[in-house]
Amino acid sequence: MVGGRKSQKVDVRIIAATNRDLLALVKKGEFREDLYFRINVIALDLPPLRQRRHDILLLAGHFVCEIADEAGKPSPAFSDTAMQVLESYHWPGNVRELRNVVHRLVVMTDNGVIDAPDLPQLMRFSAMRGGKDFESLEEVEARHIRHVLVGVDGNRTKAAAILGIDRKTLRKKIKQYGLE
Image (cartoon, rainbow, N blue to C red; front, side, top):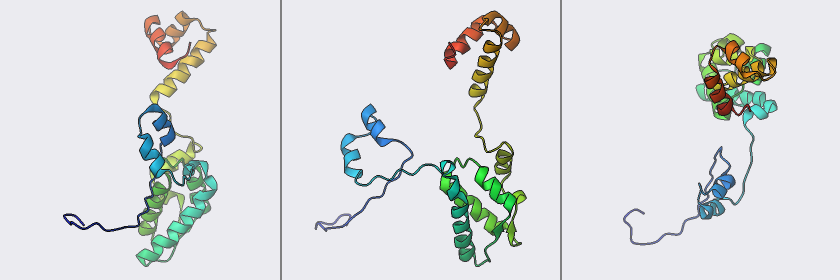
């Protein structure tokens, strides 16, 4: 007890989760080695939800029943289209994001069916893209510069003219993106 003078024996289990590779961080000196070996008794490697597509509908079904029961509502069903969108979405927030989306859907749905228009707009948009993750502007730019350079057989003067930039800027971007 805080402020107490008498020691008490306790039986404690610590469950910790991270999305980082702790062993790699230990090797880089960014995580304490002694702490790593104290907490690493049983390690479970669970890939992100986007790599376990077969789990998405199972988890969504479980969450629908659980949340509907808590809310005292009948469990709505997912339409085929909604299930396709759920499966094709990239789930950057992993299982927690899935649970939150299902929670919102259960609370907001009055009829017994959850359809694609009921899903968040970003999710529907992502599904229309074929479930691909979004790219950063730098990734798009690097890919475009590489494409132009290949198209002009590596001629940097022609590539710079096509891209509408000077050779110095092109040289800087080639170095920045490792396109050499």
